Amino acid sequence: MLPIALFCASAALGLYIVLGYPLLLGLMARRWPKPVLKSRQRKTVSVVIAVHDGERFIGAKLDSVLALDYPRELMETLVVSDGSTDRTDSIVRRFAPQGVQLLRVPRGGKCAALNAAIPQARNEILLLTDIRQIVEPESLQAMIDCFADPSVGAVSGELVIHRGASHDEADIGLYWRYESWIRNRLSDVDSIFGATGPFYALRRELAVPIPPDQLLDDMYLPLAAFFRGYRLIVEPRARAFDYPTSRETEFTRKARTLAGNYQILRSYPALLGPRNRMWFHYASYKLGRLALPWVLLLLFVSSCFLALPWRWFLLGSQAAFYGLAAVDPLLPGGFPAKRLSSFARTFAALMLAAVWGLKVFFVPPRSLWKESKIGGLPR
Image 1 (cartoon, rainbow, N blue to C red):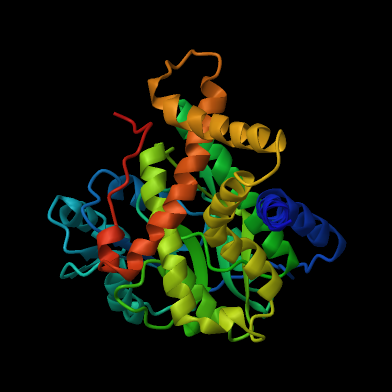
Image 2 (cartoon, rainbow, N blue to C red):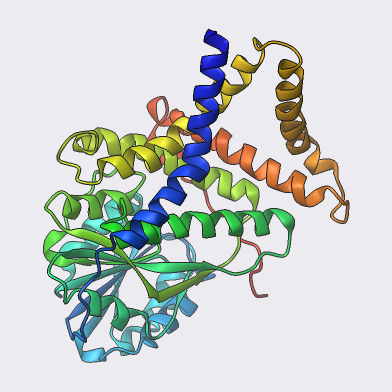
């Protein structure tokens, strides 16, 4: 009876994490939404961009920021160069006549760069954004309007991934849309558990110093506001566009993100207790993501002890799925089963990334930062 109980429990939990909770969340967001009180606002804004060796992107990024449909006299733009060794600094200096300020700091990582830049910011709202994503002109005003609601502490933009050309880029794009849907519904219910790192706004008064080895500044900063009673929301009208990434790049990013989630639990143990008003959602979503690979492992092991013929049927089904993932690199792009094998490989890679994230307990956290390999870049 024990193998059957373990199999049923692991199957039910796995289905709940992947499908059941999102469906339940969607129902809760529809039945019990918590609207944000929006109205036209004109608050002062400090745009902060941390960059290391970003010569490929920084010019287009600053053009995008300067094209924001928001009064220029209410904005300042501060680029903090984290020990850049390429032409980043010289490109930024070309924007000085348009009010862009350059702050150069020794190489210390993104969190150290933000810690240096944020105290220099003079305005009411911090707009924290990365260099690669291009933002829509109306995005900043859409974000600022949300701060009319005094309960809102941070506002995330919507990150839109350009359609990928390859199967793996398309699969990553599909996964990102799945994750974005969950984040939007969490925002409808109350709060997300961080922010969209490449593009979010935060009340300046809520900013706190970030531990230099923190992997997820975009969780650490907003969660400080969350535990002061503020909401962390998504504004779908504020959009930033990014290039598709490969499966290998997404594996590295996801491993770093999940490693950062372990760090966040150490920094904010209250996430597991009654002070977390979103405890049910945190357990179902964030802890569920960390637990899912082990749930699937238990599902496979418990299948080995089931009675025949169920044992061979269930083991064969799981083996076929993981086998498709294993042979996907060998299949040509036009092969009929490529779509399914590519999906299986992407799913398996994301599960391995959750396990790989445990490295954070054994290696320096900054060693998990890797440069992203981006597809679809203009030549």
